[in-house]
Amino acid sequence: MISALPIAGGSVLCGAGAMAWAVRGRASAVFGPSVWRGLRGRRAVALTFDDGPSEDTPRILEILEHHGAPATFFFCGANVARLPAVARAVADGGHEIGNHSYTHPLCCFRSAKFIEADMAHAQQVILEHTGVSPAWFRAPYGVRWFGMRRAQCRLNLKGVMWTVIGYDWNLEAEAIVERMAGRLSDGAILCLHDGRELRTRPDIGATIGAVRRMVPLLLDRGYKLETVSRLLCPTT
Image 1 (cartoon, rainbow, N blue to C red):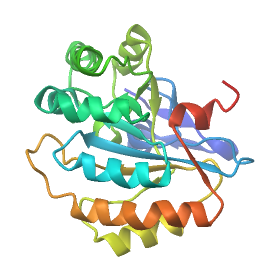
Image 2: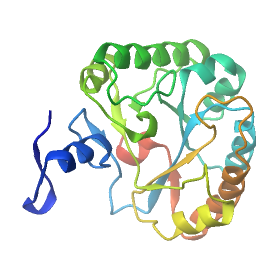
Image 3: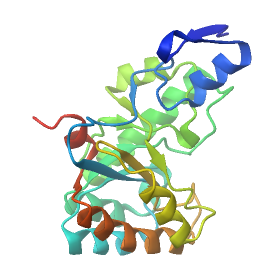
Image 4: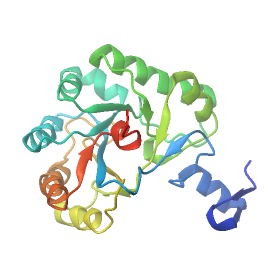
């Protein structure tokens, strides 16, 4: 187990604190290469969505298309298998697709074999239905664990956390926007959800309302909306 970890500023986390930071810390790369923001010197952000696709993902696509705003969708493979046409619509809309596991498990205390198999299944299903082989992986619940580094390496995936998360599964649209707008910064990766784990017909009305307000707000503040790949690798 992890007993101590150095962190920024020369401090050291020990015991349970070290383990908690390794598992959930947004800047942690203990369990595999991971990033949580882009360059601070560029007026750009990445809008990302987890847990999709869902039956209402097309409503988010309409808002993004209206503003010419690309985004990155971290798909659950089981949802892609259930809604392949929606998954293809995301890819056809010019958006980036990432891997968010197949079954959306809480990976802590899962075996390395299970973690890799679940990630690989998602990778296969996403490729089969969209023609896209994801380059980025976001762990369900933001929980990293033993075995994830090897799985990422074998599947050629890099981990992505977030700079700001909207808590859109339990906040109303106005509160989501207020929370995210107050934490904006150059290079931020913003996390919302166009699904709710593996639920059929989830209620994402608050997320849709927040996106309807957030995208024009970001543009009015002079931010360029980019995919995760473009935000993190602006010269490629």
